[in-house]
Image 1 (cartoon, rainbow, N blue to C red):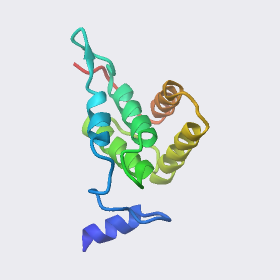
Image 2 (cartoon, rainbow, N blue to C red):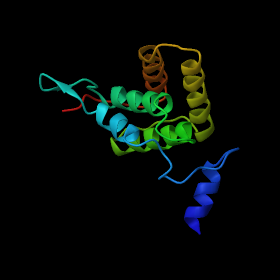
Image 3 (cartoon, helix red, strand yellow):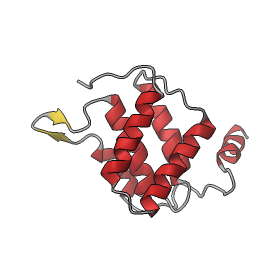
Image 4 (tube, rainbow, N blue to C red):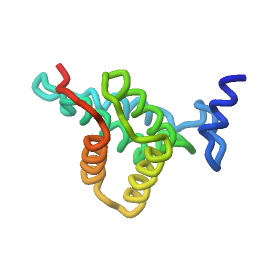
Length: 133
C-alpha cells in the first residue's frame, strides 16, 4: 500500500508507466556514462559534475516512455544524498528545474550547455561538494 501511495505522489498529472516500459539499454547507457574515465581519471570528477550529468542525461536521454523528468529528480536527489551532499531545492523546485532542462532540449539547446546550467543551479543549491577519488 505504501508503494502505491508513493507512486501516486510522483504521478503529478500523468501516471507513471511500469519500469519495464522503457527503451532497452538507454538507462544503462546513461548511468554508465557518468562513470567514464580517461587516462585513469573520471570525466565527471566531482559529485556535482556527476549529479549534473545524471540530471541532464536522464531528462534529455528519454530512457523511459514517460516520467523522465520525475525519474531525474528522484535519482539525482538520491545520488547527491548518497554522496553526502545536501541538495536544498524542494521537490517542486526540482521539478520546475527539470521542466526547464526538458524545454531547452526541445528547443535544440546543446546538451553541453544544459549540463552547465545544471551544474550552476546545483552548485547554488547544495551546501558542499567534493572531488571524487
